[in-house]
View 1 (tube, helix red, strand yellow):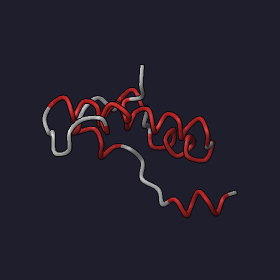
View 2 (tube, rainbow, N blue to C red):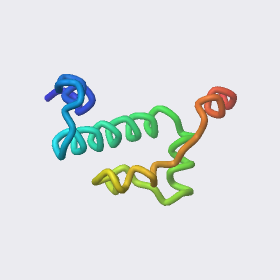
View 3 (tube, one colour):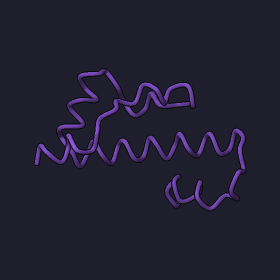
View 4 (spheres, rainbow, N blue to C red):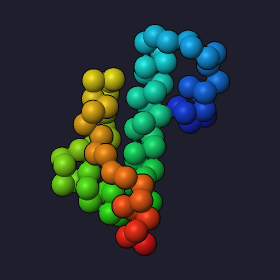
Length: 77
């Protein structure tokens, strides 16, 4: 099965609604999970914030995704 981001991008532009919202949230779950696997520092931030990717179920949950500037991760390497 293709990634949620691929399915989201395959939709027509400006195709809004529940399906697009659901795909967007699924793509965010996949992306955050992948980042946590690849970057222990970000995984630690998520753990410290009490954030789990499974808790990202809808658009209202998006604000709970821990935010960090990309440059902060780059400077840790």
